Image (cartoon, rainbow, N blue to C red):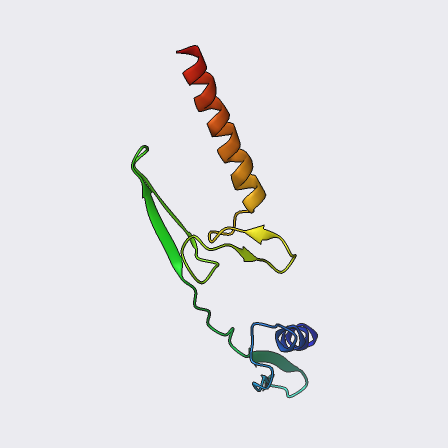
Length: 121
């Protein structure tokens, strides 16, 4: 019964469940005496009804890389395609959740490679 109570209290504190939803712990005791009525087999079953995890909805953005013929999908984090946003930690992110500074560094590396190729041609 202790472990079932722990499940209930964990469920109560789960932010993904409705706070006011009722949780139920049902105890079933089955007693089966022997022929001499001296010993009784006691079986205890506990069932728990927890609050369900609330559903979640999000938008997924898909794209196809024509160079590699691969398809990517990621959670759409901003309100408009191409728009940046500030996350909970105060970091600037692109609409796919990638840090903008990382994207800019990758773009700079690609530009440097293209400039090196042009210079060596």
